[in-house]
Length: 60
Image (cartoon, rainbow, N blue to C red; front, top):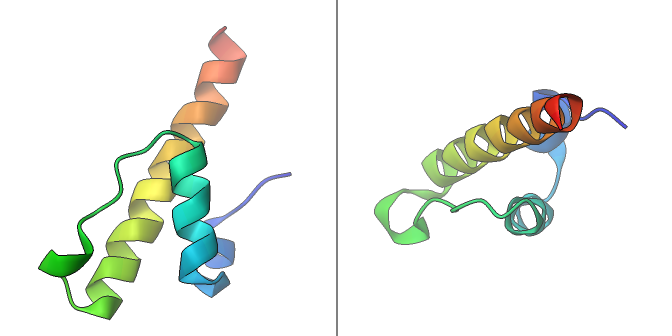
């Protein structure tokens, strides 16, 4: 299943955080950002992690 950035934006923040942790990503610090900025940074981080994970499967 392919997730795109729009899917991540529409998902609940808790679920995106859970996905990020499952990928072993370092999530952004909640205290540094207001909520909207935190969600943007979280989605960006998780999307990059998904792309990296996808690429690593092709090269392993």
